[in-house]
Length: 150
Image 1 (cartoon, rainbow, N blue to C red):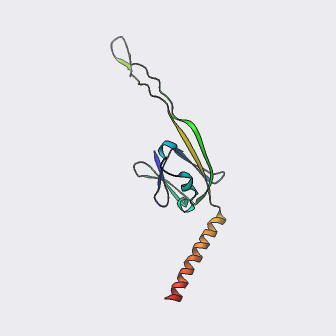
Image 2: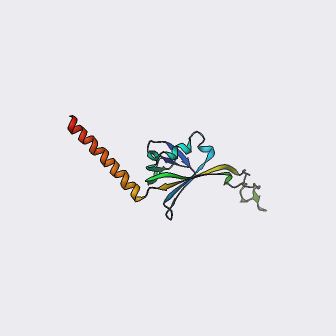
Image 3: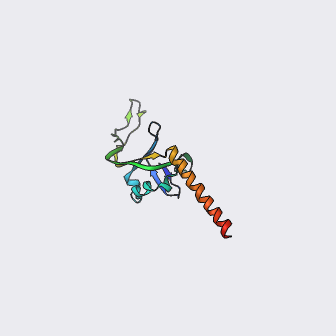
């Protein structure tokens, strides 16, 4: 299971991450049982958390990095999502000579959970330019204050 790490280091276990090129957006799918202690709505409404999202594997390997996503577009919950199909068990099959033809398979129940799908919109070029200008003005204000005030 991969993890999505926000700017401040908050780690969210994700089921799947899909980047949509037609409508510049990022769709994040999360299993509800794995993210119960995280307030997802609050987290994904915070623009500063979403400016850079890093997808990491369980082993700590960087899988992908997503930048300039800022707006929570949709938040959906799909109840009773089948994460893993049930497996019907069967006994081992042995031929006349006693050789195993097929191994025994133990039955496993289906893994069902609620699937949370969050869609984040990417910042437009204009929004990024405005953000860059605001940062530049802030930096210039600090520099002028230091020059004027010592």
